Image (cartoon, rainbow, N blue to C red):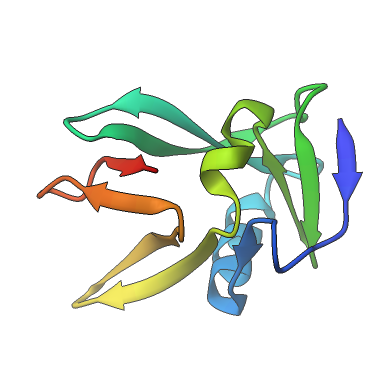
Length: 116
């Protein structure tokens, strides 16, 4: 596991609302962290995967955001470079949104994306 400090140019970032949201998910699970990865999925190629895990994988890069540690899967780093994770309100729902500068297309339902 590589522990890194936040680099706004090349790393994944969390907005304040996303940090608060993830911290609330981890408050009753001390020592756990959020893991971000991608998987092949959908009609355009990839989907984001967020999990609560006990520990990062040996190859993961761990980014610290206040009370939240975010492990980024080494296989997904290139796809996720520069991605901002936000929590937004859509009507009565709160939704985790990914603002990924590498995305060149998204499917109509918004579940999958492709990169250049």
